[in-house]
Image 1 (tube, helix red, strand yellow):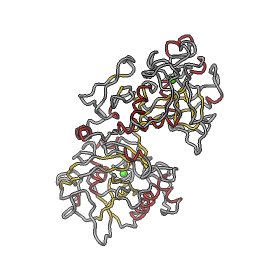
Image 2 (cartoon, rainbow, N blue to C red):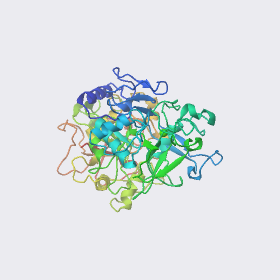
Image 3 (cartoon, rainbow, N blue to C red):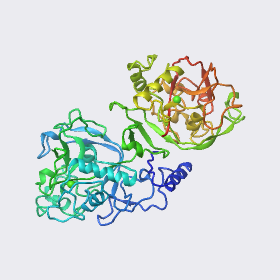
Image 4 (tube, protein in one colour):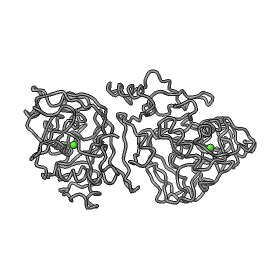
Length: 568
Ligand SMILES: [Ca+2]
Ligand SMILES: [Ca+2]
């Protein structure tokens, strides 16, 4: 369940929160939104201006977030072979080595950015280029005579209009979207004779740009990916894919001297328009063959604390997944999921099967704020970076293996050391919205995800193995995080795998403890709480209400941690 809301009005936030409360976010379309499928909608039909969360739209949905905003098409997440095989006709050497690339779900402009769209940005004072139209006319022709910096300025303008994360596509996103699931020379196949039906190129363009959308769309509803104008992408140019990212991200390089452009133009012969073809210009180059289109991030915000415009756009919308970048520019924190505020009954009722006395008295707790929770337990890879930096004590893995398994054999004090280090790396030290451990109330709220049953999904013991590593099903060891089904909040492994330290001091009952989500503290605390059960437990110990405790220095082979982060 991924949700990326804009901040444009409380009504939108409330609508999505209500959906989430009903367990429907991400599963249905709000009734008031008209949804067009880009693959079947003629170019002459304008997408509706939507008033709902774009992240809840289905794949290939067509949306527009303001009157002057570009029409966007939701691209499914997936993977593809980027580049061309050495056998492809007309191939250039810079189209290889061909490799598998994964691309997260995102949205792509249906058309190249038009003059009309560009001029709205100029009128708003956000775009300053005095680029000319070569006497061909403006309106729905693609904007030309814009350099790479101009294109990015336009993306910033649209982001500001919508509070959405608009940007240039990465080169991988561009080719993935342009191919639209095909691996042929063009997105319509191999037949060069058909190119004129799908693209403006030297053979049919009358030696100029043509209004966007005048030819047939590609399989995913995008127009003019082949031809009309070259399209700037985010990447720094490299003449080979050796070492290029395989996660759909752009190639970044300091002091980048050339930026990539894709798709060919009105000027090019057919070979220049094939899906894998690439070109490059200096970022300050302008020309009558070059324009751009935009991407929009839907679910994967990367926050750069205190530094970037994107942080301002960060959202409190429940379901949003984000990662904080390290201030060094290299590395990022664990994936975090925004949880909604809400009330819940903490603890177990007296008649719960397998319940323990310290899980009561059951009481109503109000979490009156949104906050972010680690999507997974903190892993060995993540913790080891802290160890390498000399900021965390080394831990033993008991021969279970490390990598994406949850770190174990860390004490409550070690967990605090990790939190301190992560706050330093992300620039959050001393801020009220820094990382921390969950409070015990937050942990149970996160684990239940709205459920009153013994486990987050219900009371059926036979289904627990779908959601949790425990007992013999675990192979008697920790397992890589995220291998089991997430709970209703999109969080994994709260039940089982490793126990998770929380902030609170342990008392054998909830009498006199806070009911506002804050931690129970004592001036001198000899036992801290940990929650959720582990790989070596029977199912009784994986219940949402179960509590366990140990001294702050206690380490064990089934005990790790999960993070929380207060929101700005
Ligand atoms: Ca194009
Ligand atoms: Ca766990």
